[in-house]
Image (cartoon, rainbow, N blue to C red; front, side):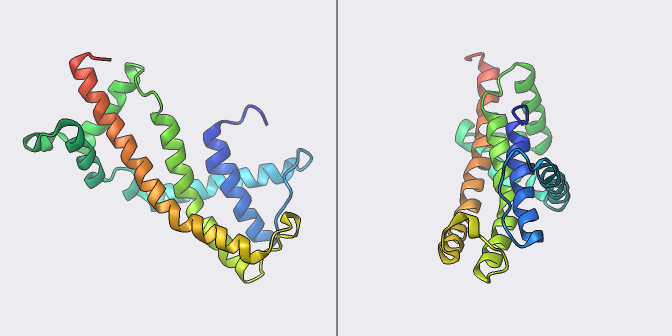
Length: 183
């Protein structure tokens, strides 16, 4: 288990775990002896992740967020025609070649995790609130769990937005510094 990547752990295993818990109607304790459960959770999470990628293709590049970040860096409204998806991708790969992505991949993993967790958390909140999921091992009242999950469901879109904006900002900022060789 130690070689699993951070991205896979967040996006596939944890999301898959919540979905598997919903399917079985109860939470499943995580321990090393449940290898088949870990495998099932990973596969379910991977399938869910791929489905979301195809359904939410519009979230891959959000033009208004990218333009806002571009303006914050360059403060040039007349150069906004440079702020296209094609130019963004080109700058991203230039940063990658120059080994200047820094923490962008971590932020991308966090954004993917937040995007992937939203629906399972909503489903989990509904299921735990109605008693469809047994949370006996947590020894916490279902009402408290439902309230906490509801809070996270409210906050997740905001945190996702801020994380995604930060990614755009850092890419355009990287362009500025690659251009001026100030890194």
